[in-house]
Image (tube, rainbow, N blue to C red; front, side, top):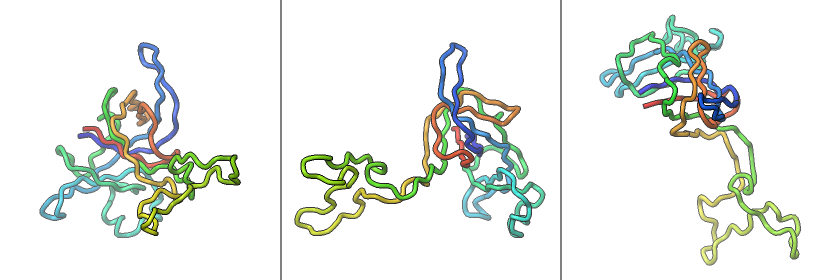
Length: 201
């Protein structure tokens, strides 16, 4: 298993050796540092804690400073499934990935605020004619015949976006070890600068 953290930069396109163009997402990935090895005896479960990104030391509280010691001032702290012989302070960069790797990416999608049913759920809306007025984007009836209540979970207007989204079976198109950049085929959830978790098994 391979994993790394990164930030989504932008989308662009790239060509392969045969001249076929692919849409790709540019991800600035790593390097990440192992900040803790959690074991079954002491912590109750096995995991590897890693740190990524940088922030000013004044924005880190004292307990976290004591935990990180001299490893760095990390912006993000995450945990992944334990594997291999990784030790405290080990660094992981994009060189662990290769072109053609199948990866799974998780990140927070763009927040869109309070949205209606047409945008949020793809409702068709009402007719514009035949006696209707201002009903193009209304949800229509929400009641049930005979039960006299609205069922839980009914699709209605509400907050949209800012959800954790996982996309599987994405392909690594190119690895730039010098600049710590991964080019991933297809779209990745989130806005520019969103933290993404990349896992390959």
